Image 1 (spheres, rainbow, N blue to C red):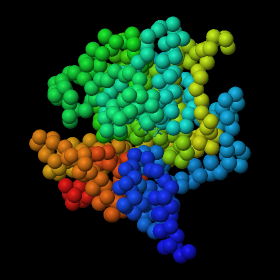
Image 2: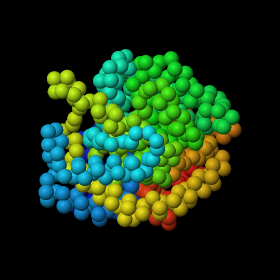
Image 3: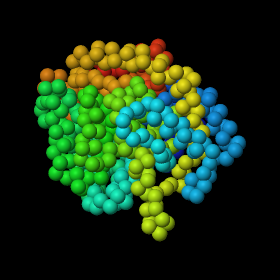
Image 4: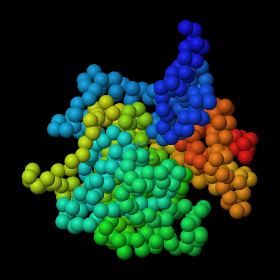
Length: 458
Ligand SMILES: *Cc1c(COP(=O)(O)O)cnc(C)c1O
């Protein structure tokens, strides 16, 4: 078979065998799929040899770029020792090293008066780390002898993953509504979405009316609520919704006041995405439970952790017959290859001064957001650190959105794709989430392509 025939064959086989996630396959079958064969730094190459700038960091996970030598080598070295061994009843070297480093990192980043995070529970993707957090919070209260905390409080526009527990605390109608008969009950507080405030107020005159609504729910129902779960600072999949300064701290204070645990889902925001190592750092808070995944291995291998306090952990200690054991675990929990990649990823943060070098690139992104916000169909261009969302609107004055079916975000994304930049929108929101290590030159080039695409399409 010639090269061209082989590529066509791959396209046929994809369509024949693969069901892609979050994808209307009927449309997929009508399009030419992009099949990736290679990556380097912040670029990915398709089978025809065309290079694209990876503007979504391979769906928000790849922070140091592709084929980063240190991570490649760490995995290769670990392969020569052992690739997998279970964490059920055994331990392994990379899980121990990584746990120690994560706890040290978290505690050097998050400094407060509260108790610190000290225990690491491993799993293998973001959704499972959320499942772990929910079950852990629920069972914690049982062990404390407090009955009835069978529910959670989550936010509208929240996204915590696609497993049923995570969907139960999700708040994105388009993704989640169809499953509602299957879900457990969760209380919903307003999304801190100032551009489209549910309460029709504006910050700061609102005096955090959305937090007051949350407090109303907690005041009435805290006896039923095990935990508040929140994406700190940025509701990512909900549309890069950036909460106003002080909101996160307000949530922490309410959790303490009403005796519910706080679960911080840092799966999207963790590992530098907001400009600091963790989003919680910006408001100096410590959650009771923290979920981390996505960037943890530099986007190489699936891995997640649910980190918690001594207080939560201690509640599960007891005699064997008391059945206080945390009955949860996955086949690939604590995979040594993934943990070795994660350790290398943390090394790079130190050695390359990733966060320090990121700051001036955040400035470039922020300035660009200010510029594009004057375009006639950009309602709001918002960012927190190195994640940005450009909200396209039909009418700037009335904030009337484009109809979902119009696929405006997708039209912009396709235009950018034709010009060498791969992005994936969330409805009408253009998401910008490049690797943290992208060069300033490539960043500017990417922003220019996106800018031109918005103008060309809207
Ligand atoms: C991506 C994401 C998840 C789910 O992680 P998966 O690895 O895709 O299961 C959960 N919470 C947040 C905030 C996320 O961005």
